Image 1 (cartoon, rainbow, N blue to C red):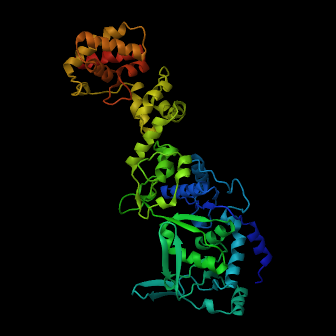
Image 2 (cartoon, rainbow, N blue to C red):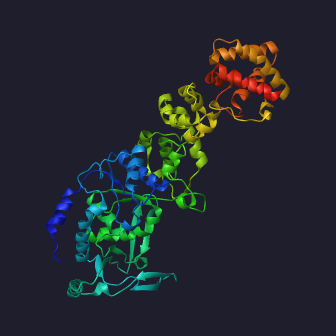
Length: 497
């Protein structure tokens, strides 16, 4: 097969030069797990920190594992996390297309070029053939592909192709010496070549394997930094051999250790560990998730932990990436989420909280914006809202033991006395604002010569039926309105009597 060298020259001429270029290249095989999001985030931060371009590429050559709608999940996640890509399938760019199946014709041509350069060969073995058990110098045994196809002459290869024999293209790996590559996290790593398997690069259907396609695409897209999981460390020598066979520059590698569920187990959807979508559905907000994921395996130094995305881009330094796996701590994320919620503009918080409040508080007379303002400083995750405010819609059936509060020295007896004394004061109150309610009930406590809590705690329990509420007695009464509050206090007196 004659090579079209003009084609390769034209492809090389398209490659952007003189700028940092990073890529996030997910496979659309399902949800966006936390490790995927971290890869996207670090890739984005490197580009922004170094004034470069962040590129989205969809690696969809594994057709058997494709999941319908997964590409939409990728777009939605990047959009919600504000990880704006400069080039990609939806925005275009100078080195498209940015979907691997749309680049299919490229891989066959580059496979032929690699064969010509001695870095690959046509293999006609059927599946399972040509596999041998090899003993390494250290005594370890491994299974490797070893066959005679690499020794076939051009004429023999062409005869088999003309006869319609199916074939794949395999990487040709020298069996002597070693391959060394440098990683910005793990440093220099050397692997003996005889430990490397001669994997398939181009399948019989003409589609490339991951190992081949990502090298071709990274070169043709001018990628300068490759961020991926540390599970790809063992494959990196084979990538380097491909780059060397073509005579191409090797990008900077950044291999990140895994995110773990605990000290022994990686996070896995199969074991119920949350994806990004799950975390959002569980009431976490995107900026908090992004902030937390950034700190999974990377440290900016110092004690500070809360960063906006823009601030992360300003301080992100690969020297802070750890070699050790990081454990996903949902309690730490919950704390961080609460900090983000507290710091939100009230209007922004209400926009997020409204669907939850609407579901929990159906009583139209209650001001949901006022409820949101009351609950915002005390909210950790949005899904907590319904349980925290459902009493506003309907007083739950509660036990009188809630009236007993050791810290405020409230007992069943003085709780009943306080409610009975509070009732006429509240019934005669015309101004039903929080300030007026507090002045009235604290004035009652003074006249009874007791602490405020002796009066306020029983009112709080009577109007909420809960041990924990998003506000104090007078705030809750102000939300409920006069008629409903007095009705509930009557019910509390009846319970205690």
